[in-house]
Length: 183
Image 1 (cartoon, one colour):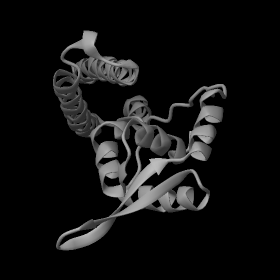
Image 2 (cartoon, rainbow, N blue to C red):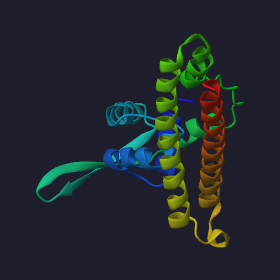
Image 3 (cartoon, rainbow, N blue to C red):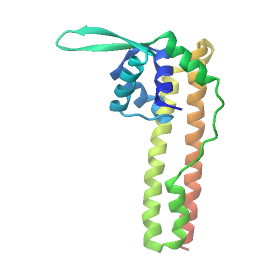
Image 4 (cartoon, one colour):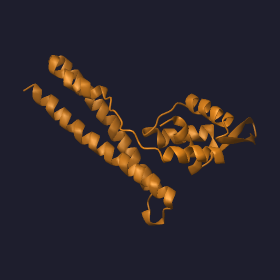
C-alpha cells in the first residue's frame, strides 16, 4: 500500500486540510499506516498535480489561508483499482522478537535490561489499547446507528483492539519467561 491510498481513504471519509489529515493520521490511521506531516503534505501536492485530489483555498482571519482537499473522480478511480487488487502477505520484521531470542547469548545484566525494555514496550501498547477503547466508547457507542463507513471504521478499530490485547498477552508471557531464566 502506498501512502496515497491511505490519504484517499481518509479524504473520502472526510475532506479536509493537510493539517486535519495529519491529525487523523495521529489519532487513528497512524497505527495502521504511519506518515509524518511532511510526507503527507508532499504526497498531497503530488496527488493534486496528478489530478487525484483538488484543493480549495480557504481564507482565515489572522492566519495564512488553508487548503481544503477533496478526492476527484480520478482519485476515486485510483482507489477503486487498488481496492480490487489482491493483498500481498506481509512480512513481519520485529526487532524486539530478535532481541528476545538473542537474550540466550547475554548475561543476567543484559536480560535485566531487556526486561526493562519489554516493560517499556508493554506500557506503550497498553496506552495504545487504552486510546483505542476510549475512541471506541467516544465514536461507536451505538453500533446499531452506524452507517456503512462507520461500521467499517469500527471493524478496523476492533482489529486494532484485538491486536493490542494479543501483543499484551504475548509480552506478559515474554516477561514471565525472561524473569524465570534467572532462577
